[in-house]
Image (cartoon, rainbow, N blue to C red):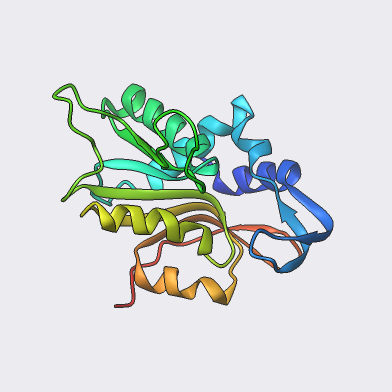
Length: 199
């Protein structure tokens, strides 16, 4: 992981935590908003985040990385590139759109195609599901459904920020959960610990 996770937390909090009155994607109200795109589009932070995410999942066996667009794209792509450069491990990626396209192929799931013309998301594939922030976890349900419908499995779920909402306990308890940071009610980030599934 980056040498100082507390420093990474400070940098993310400085750039990404906005204070005020916000309505979250879940519909819940909050006095702060974590705008992770501010970090994931910044060259100096995206590499450190990718390194931290790879290191956090180092003990987890997985084959591909992905999740719901657009947050997962901004995480999985730097992770894939950094893994190849730093660790000599090539990791393919995928993403699921929240709405099916009405043009072109009309697909809602996009994934790497191997040299032998097979899809990477198939039965037996172990997925590291990623997202920038989690409140209730409902935005991940669509990706979970796609993964399970294709016969793949979720090796772990890794997020940059866990808002610690009890409505996401179904996800924290049901899957290996690898958050980088937890955020308290004031919007302060703290280094998190990995959690094994309860069942």
